[in-house]
Image (tube, rainbow, N blue to C red):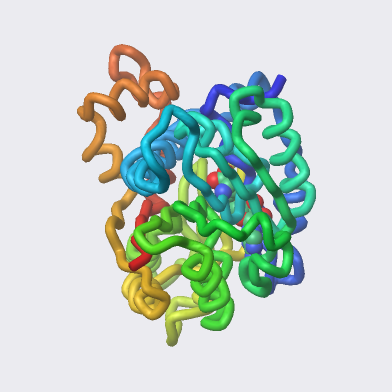
Length: 327
Ligand code: SAM
């Protein structure tokens, strides 16, 4: 069966680009599993939590941009670009946000095909117009892969979940990404996403004893292995990442937040929000909408018991959520 439950649909991770296609291969190779099999994942609690964080981001920072995008009617409204859409795990979230147009782009062609199938099979999502393309945000412009009519109207929201850190190998690839986000986003529109928590990863690295030659840390759920203790410059800070049942030791790059913000400013993108996942949780656990949503998305049971064990909870804080506004 197709997954339209909006839970447990975190796509697996494999990174490519600039690494001899390792990322593309990884993501393309991971099988699409139905919702039943997905429930068997040993990290289902963490996957549900990641999905909940994305839903919170969408409600807080995408909804306002979508609502102001057109005159108030009962019709669906708003146009969203899902950059690094993977297998389309967020399509259901966007259909619940009642958007009218969804554009999905990802470097992994097999994943893009699966995202398209997910949209075709999902009756609710089918109420929205959707277009998909294989696209490398490090080296291509959107106009290279999408027909002019798809891009005619600007986006109200660009969403990039768990993916843009792949661009931080080089300055030029980050610039390509930001140029496209900014160029196709309307003024007042929002750019939302999730990226690794550089400060937290570097703190773990600094705490490693000198005898830890491997430069690695983690637990049963995740493992991070840095290439070197020291690094100069804001780009190409490489580490290898493993996440149980999701990412199989693929190269990633740290996103230094201050550098990201100052580069984004050059493209008229102003920061609205940046928070560690643990804080997204503590900020919203008692919220009248997001608290009950946690139970519906099986992050918690009705008694407030978490579906994550300690290791999953620690792994959750590898990420931060962010939002920018286009001026
Ligand atoms: N956004 C989806 C989600 O949250 O479920 C997928 C996240 S998955 C961890 C990361 C995705 O980024 C993969 O689908 C991968 O193919 C994509 N990706 C990595 N590098 C990319 C690039 N240069 N251009 C476009 N997509 C890329």
